[in-house]
Amino acid sequence: MKFICDTERCIDCNGCVTACKNEHETPWGVNRRRVVTINDGIPGERSVSVACMHCTDAPCLAVCPTNCIYHTEDGIVLHSKDQCIGCGYCSYACPFGAPQFPETGLFNHRGKMDKCTFCAGGPEPDTSEAEFKKYGRNRIAEGKLPACAEMCGTKALLGGEANQIADIYRQRVETRGYGPELWGWKIAYGRPKRGGEIQAKGDHPRENLIPNAAQNDTGRFPQ
Image 1 (tube, one colour):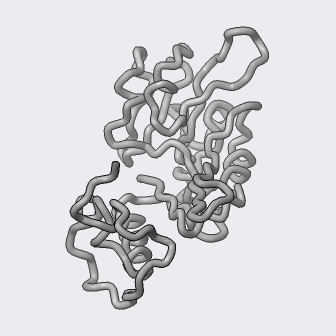
Image 2 (cartoon, helix red, strand yellow; image 1 turned 180 degrees about the vertical axis):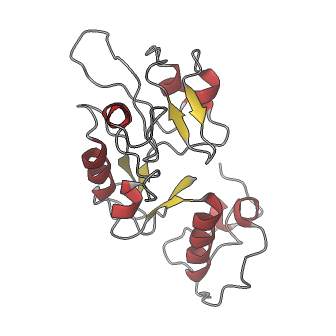
């Protein structure tokens, strides 16, 4: 289970942030999801919705001294607040800034770590009151998608089974007229497509891409 955010579609509406906050009633000072804008106000501006990416080789899991962070059978990275000691190692290790601590108002006191759960709750019994109080709503147990992905008006944010959302994103990129020429494309998506070749393909140049940039030149690496 993974998230993918399509920066060509994200419009910085913060609907995903609001949906997450409302669904889980997170404590003051904690936003499990946030929207980051790059090149704000200049040509090439892009926004991307960021939360826990539920890494296959999660660095937060590797550094946790109490082993309170774990993988579920679906590959979702969850944590046990009963085991958390608030050391902060996970927050330093995570490249996405996902683990956070609520602002309690006490000097040098952070309490238990809080993070995106992919709307899958925690170690408590599914859909129980205790689970909701600690981790928020367990939408996965209810057979639903994460609230942020379901609320996204432009479908920029996709959440679900990794291979399925990767297929959707690959088709979007190829329809826009580029794909294999992007740096790293063969590594990420270079495998046979299920169901045959994609029919809708663009063959026009991308006007918003910088000529001879690393991402458009397969022979060059980014600086």
